[in-house]
Image 1 (tube, helix red, strand yellow):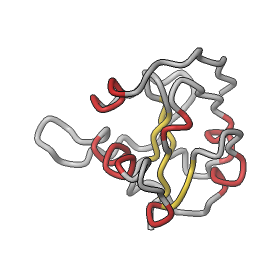
Image 2 (cartoon, rainbow, N blue to C red; image 1 turned 30 degrees about the vertical axis):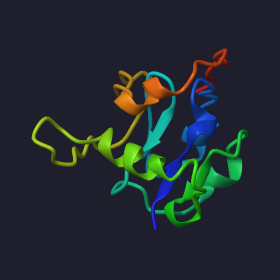
Image 3 (cartoon, rainbow, N blue to C red; image 1 turned 180 degrees about the horizontal axis):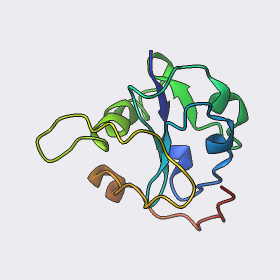
Image 4 (cartoon, rainbow, N blue to C red; image 1 turned 120 degrees about the vertical axis):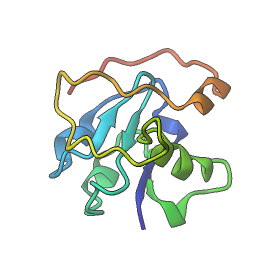
Length: 115
């Protein structure tokens, strides 16, 4: 099982999940955060602290959010289609470019990030 960040995170970007992650596998994107599928140790700390209830194990995703398992993986693919292993997120890192599918989601008033 892999932890996945779902649509509830789009344009919210609270960032508290990044402070609870012991392996820094949660990366900031332009409109949301993403969990790297192989860096994550599946401890569930982020799931318990997410203020918008956006984090679930991939086998717990509802039909509306099932695509986010694919989105969270594909955002880390390099130009050759291979999974990039960036080695952990840190405050001040450049945002990961958002997955193109996020353009399908209406923009919400963004909240400030506290990471």
